Image (cartoon, rainbow, N blue to C red; front, side, top):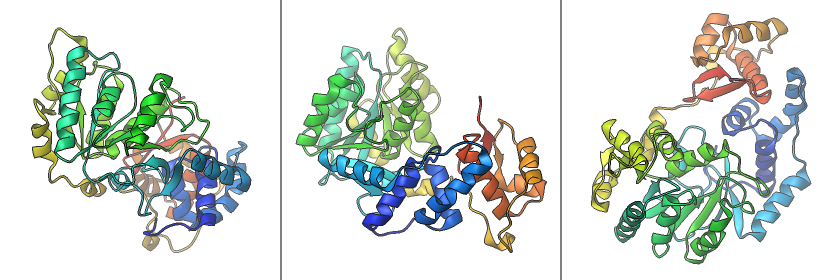
Length: 372
């Protein structure tokens, strides 16, 4: 996506494209790969939308400019992937957000970051362990990342205020959840920490937004520490996402009699590193390199060598692709081979389905029909 700052007009175009209906991080990159620039992709969107039979809302120029101005009033600014201010570890995850909104954190060492997550209904012992780990990791030079939730998240942020902490929001800057942690968010900024989100101002977080937030918590970090977590919890989702991003996962063991320890104990059984002190974490991640994850999850881009010309798909091609797709993920290149479609035609068809919210991507190269 480039290694320099966007111009103001490019930033507005990126924002308009990213905020268009059904354009997420993967779709955004596919559109850029197809059309070259955000401006060109914006021009092509209406025609693409007509093929889906669904109206497509694209923010106006003034709406995008208003969002940028409103973020500034919160002391925040939008940063694009590839720009110097973009968190370095985050650019090495699948589906990295093309734009994020950041407030604060100018003096943080974003390279040395550890996520600490856990139960919202944390025990006193869990809160104490979180405080000890956060304080000691801070003394060892690490920045603590978490999701500003109740319980373990809030305890991790509070314990690391003095050394710097990063809170990832599930909603917009003006919709901090839970509201009881709004004072904590202000304390984070007042002490040199950072708030970060990929969601626009005014966005009220929904249940589906918390796993999206969790992928950023793990993506910002060299490793994820689970202090307390039930078997079915957002913390275990964060741990799974961390593994997919090739991050180290740690867990604090707990009593088998405490349901809040079931998730952490299960992670240890499955191979997570058992944690008894901050040094256990520091010894493991001291030489971690998140850029290695790029080797595992490349995004699908049409191979020009296989596509001698730009071929537009027809109705028969659309019907054959829909018949071939299922809710089981399949490699795009396998679809191309089975259907004997030129890569450029396949790209257009997948973009149409993406904009119609009919498909979802996994691991960069796999595509499947969405569950209804």
